[in-house]
Length: 419
Image (cartoon, rainbow, N blue to C red; front, side, top):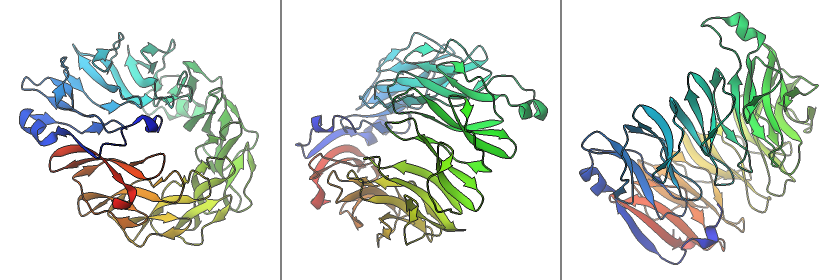
């Protein structure tokens, strides 16, 4: 997270809001959302007249709406939601509606730069993307998703370029799906597309494409790789380059490919969710060595331990030397670090967070309906009604806890050893 050093790491505990009081004051209180720094909590509330509006730290916005949903704080702490007024939808940012109105708006997305706001929109029975209030010049019969470039200036979406009648499988088979970038569609269409990705410099776009019913490959800026495969998963650009990596299925199993050529010698029963290390020197991915045996492979070498139910996406430590992942076995979750699972297990667990020195691992978990923090496999002393993901200070000594306890929302800063 950006600007963490500017957060208040000195105050031990702040009671930000009485969330139980909200529920006595308003007929309906929807899901809570909080800022990254923990200073604000918000939820969409319904007033007695059936009008809705966001409520921040106990204070409702002055304006009300017929509908509002998908309330979220942006990385720079602006409160954003799509809202309906007079039968038209728009985006509202810190109580200020965008000038444009739409038939519908969804898929609220923040740019990696933390400043850009984008969403899918429907207008006059056509679909597109709106970025910071500006709609694509060209709209399409369908636009299913929204992706914002790393610099926050560009957007992309999977689009359908031709209307297809219900059950018209023959037109679909001709290929009517492509990628549109800033409203401009690729020149080539495909049978299906998924996994759209921008390069780190925001100049190129890649996606997994289906050339025909049995042939798959990766297309970059609309141009397919020369080599095709029996199946592929979502591509990723290597940060700092235009090289595209994707899991591909070839004779003998799955492997990792760069620009169409295999880069791992070993093949697996399955391979997906590849991730680059912070120093860009290593690649980790979820793999199955056999049917029902899941693990993590790093640069093609799997961990010695496998898990029967699931292994989720790998997380590298800041120094790029360690890898942690959520693993599931016997219907219970835990964290494995470099192939060694913790001895403690939970009903649910969230992505691991490494300390800045890469020595500690902290996670949010759930057991018997209560939320708790876990450090290096040791459950914390406190339990919570609800808990957001923790953040660790730059010196690795303190943890920011954003939690609801006894009907109150607290922002707490405690020493990591005191959890």
